[in-house]
Image (cartoon, rainbow, N blue to C red):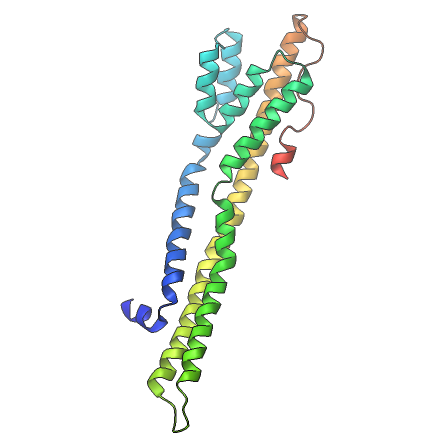
Length: 221
């Protein structure tokens, strides 16, 4: 390994730093985007039971908000369940955009790495080509310098591509996972709003409740 680093020349250190950053971001997002942390199973049922049992105090709603991103969205539904439908929709949309922003943290950085890594490899290739041309002289070329220049060019090109491929794969994968989570939150928020709105109409408190359209449309686009 040390011999490879030596043969690849000083440009390889930029690629090594990029690869470490890429791995750190991938592991951080995989751990943070676990389903149990983002959309806990059974949370919607627990929230509806909490409302039925009249345990939806401000303290309980605050705890729900801190529970998970899904809890944050459902907490906004509970806070605005007595508001007009448009106000509830606007509040839940704001919460959805905030959640989408938090979930997408660092994901765009992986896309940037997927683009930058081959460019860093190309930079190393240029440095290697400079060494190759520098090995020629009117009296003959230096074989050792020529071989070193070729090593620098090829190793950096290969490392750049090697870093870019997994970065792009995980960037796409994480974006897909986040979009799936946002869709589940949208469905849960809509169901909660419809159930709460139906309960309000049944008790004569309101004649217009529920969220009848996708509430995370802006966040998903």
